[in-house]
Image (tube, rainbow, N blue to C red; front, side):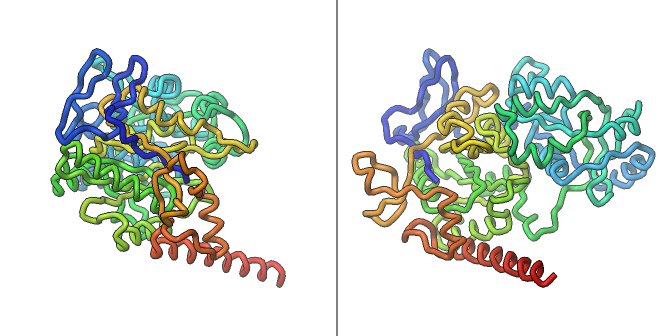
Length: 461
């Protein structure tokens, strides 16, 4: 996977026309200084930033009130929600989408879909690039009728939440897909998983979540809420938090840029920058490495000393993945604001994927970082773009790409990495820590064993 690493230039920003975001090169002298944005000067933030809307939204019902809510829910029409809907309930209930308080009503949906933002009562904007909505079918709409509130039940039939002061409106799937992904081509993973089979109506309202969402998969201790993360940052006396979003195993190129980012933040005058290593934990496409395998691999990276456990927090971001490129990367950045991160690392083709029907990338690989520098509602977040890292065949390690000796560098894509692991081959020395690589090899061996067993069973039948 090719990566962008901060330019070692004396300039402290990459200007974007008529915008005032922080696109930092991290090459400032050892002191906090004002950064010039055209005619306007703004100070780089050193402390944890406020959540969008000024207050972190938390929607889990207090324990003492849960019995009363359960009793009240028995009198309401019910709407059954699926696995990905549950992930969105989790996201909204903990405040990742603050100031959103539930599934979007129509005015919020239209603002998100067409403007990638929501306007607050005071006239300010917060970023909201992905619609967070709940679809229902014709039968459910009829059953809900004119009810004011509904009870949401999970895939197993258990009460999950109450949706208050509901509003039902038309679900124009084609418009939603076209505006979110920029295409209606078949083969978009989230569309096929969630939208194609969804109902023709959307139901919005304010959520009251009965209990904290748990998955009981052995990973819940990694699922820190925005409030818990902010407490951890305070406990570690962080004066800067830089977030790194990923859905792949960590190789030494990732580690290079994360360690280099921390070093440069120290050079800027920050005393204790903390890395939030924040793998996405919701829905991902079938060929992505599963979450449990990724978390085991990440733990090996820390055990092997590739990243420093004292200055790194590993936590799961519960959002589903859309693979919607520049539109989705805004959501990834906005959610980290609510968790308290004031720096966000962005690389090549963030949240992107290959075109589902053509042999090319679906999005321009540079557009994600450019969009983050212009997106409405992200002005208070410092964006960290970076240059390419690749495997240096002369130094036998991942290094920053040097165009003057391009022939010495080997680019190992995520697909190539998975091919190595699937075939039991070792990548070049220095590409990934041995402990982390063994986790991937063992995972693909287990897949091959399962496939062989299934084929044998089919032949015997």
